[in-house]
Amino acid sequence: MKAKILTLAGALVALLLTLTSHAATASMHRGTTDDSNDTPVIGVVAGTSTTGHTVEWEKQQTADASTIAEEAGRGGADVILNGLTDGQTPTTIFSGQVTGDGPNELIKTTHRKKIQRELRDAIASARRGAPARGRVDVLSSIRHLADNLHALPHHPRTTEIVLFGSGLQNTPPLQLTDAATLADTKTTLEDLERQGMITDCRGWNVHMIGAVQTLDGPLDSLREVQLRELFRQLFQRCGGRLVEWSSDRLISFPGAGTEVATADWVKKRQVIVPLRAGVLFDGDSATLRPTARRDLDKPVAILTRTHATASAEVAGYAASVPGGSADKALALSWARARAVGKYLQTHGVSPSRLKIVGRGLEDPVASNRTEDGRQANRRVVITCTMH
Image (cartoon, rainbow, N blue to C red):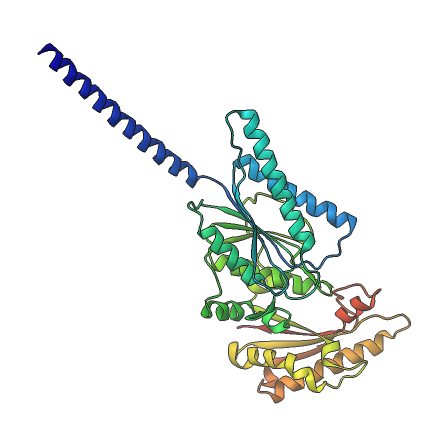
């Protein structure tokens, strides 16, 4: 009898130990799941490069890559690095958690540093190997990165995103090389949303580095702010924030979550369409080229359909050339503004809604010391104001 009691007691003890073990294991798994929800996530895209690979550029892109790798290792972050090749499908270059593994702290640290070096070199290589010319497809890049991030088993409240490369999309469905498309942010984003091209980016803190660099050099100041404003609103619309906009380097990482400033003309309810005179006119001529309608029909659409009650100022500008006459430049700027204004009128814009001005050499957007700068300064700017 005593033996039976001992046997039964032993069985009960064994059962209790088993149940305790299962409970501990379940608790451990629950803890792991909860912890994984706090694991930082970093997404990086090394897109189309339009910057020359100078020694200074090489140093800076290595420094940017090191900054990301160090931050990833500090928090044991999950990192996804995508590349965007010239006209091809985006590729995933690196995907993994930057953390150490091993039986002791020394081995864990050594392992973590090895992964950090691999990540740093992968980012630097992707930027260095990006095509210098060709297609820029930022939307596909963002969508591919979002798909990869959504596939992760955990989703922190904020995710740091770094987009390296030109932001001047020149592939369907978005042609930001078109002045009116870039200027009319509201209509452009509505078109993208109708086409299902705006992905879910909730919780993203987005850093855009080098987005102003184009195949023909950096954008002028107005188009740069227009491009920045378009991406600010795009990420705001899909649930994220554009927290950094830098021409050449990663300045603040991780981001503080403070959104970049809204462009002034958005507060004034304006759409500003800058058109290069070299696209509209020949040489010193004020006669519109037959091909000018390709660039003028969209401002016509803005003023006759999208914002049919808006008023518009059509302002001509000229460039300063050695030995040139300021009076001649002023006269040419007036004549070109009148030619554009007449086109708008003959295509349905009431003269009462238009103000035509010539500003000559005023308000240059680039240096007149170079031909590229002078080409940028020779322009006609259509400013539409909603009432």
